[in-house]
Length: 268
Image (tube, rainbow, N blue to C red; front, side, top):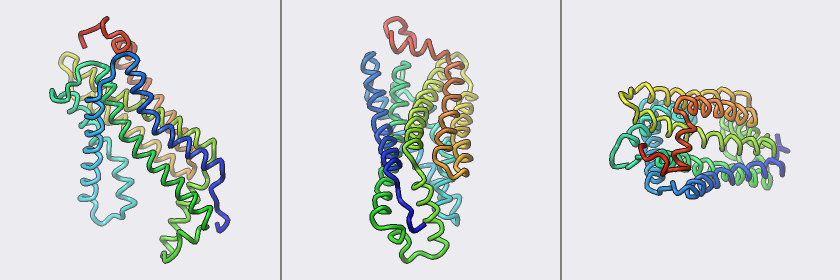
C-alpha cells in the first residue's frame, strides 16, 4: 500500500475521460447548429431543471436519512435521482414557458440536462487527477494523517480503486460518458414524443423513470466488482440497450429526419 501510485496510463485515461465529458455538449450543439436546429433557451432549461432536480433529491435524502453517513447519503441520492430528474423532464416538456415545440428543442433540452451532468462529472474526474498527483508526490501518508483506523481503511480502499485505473479503463469511461449522454437525449425525445401523442398517459413517464433507474442500478451493482472498467463496460451495454429500446418505441428515425429536414415536417 505504501508504494501505491497512479500510473501514467491511469492519469492519461482520466484526462481523456474528463476531456470527453467537457467536449460532448459542445459537439452535440455543433451538430444541431449544422442542421439549424440549435436553440439556447431549451439548453438553459435543461441545465436548470437538472440542477433543481438534483438539489431536491439531495435535500429529500438528507431529510429522510438524518442518521445515515454522508457517504451513504451520496449513494442513495445517486440511485434515487431518477425519481426527480424524469418528472422534471416531463414537466419541462409540458410547460408552455419552456417553449419546447419541436424534436430539435427536445434534443437541446437533453443537451442542457446531460451537459450539466457532464460538467459535474468532468470536475469530479479532474479532482481524481489532482488526487493522483498528490498521491504520487507525497504518498498515502498525506491522506492518512490524523485519521481513525476505520476512516484510514476507507481512504485506502478509495485510493486503491482510483489508482487501479489505466488507459484502457479511461477510454472505456469516455465511451460510457458518450452512451450516458445519448441516454439523456433519448429520454428527452421519449417524453417529448409521448406527450404529443393523442391521449398520452403517464405510463411513459414511469417508463422513463424505470429506464433511468435501471441504468443507475446496473452500474451500482457493477461497482461491487471494485474495477472501474467493469462499471464502464456495464454502463455502456446498458446505455446502448436503453437507447435502442427508446428509438424503437418512438420511431427515432422519423424524429431524426424532422431535425435534419425541418421544412419537410412542421407538424411537431
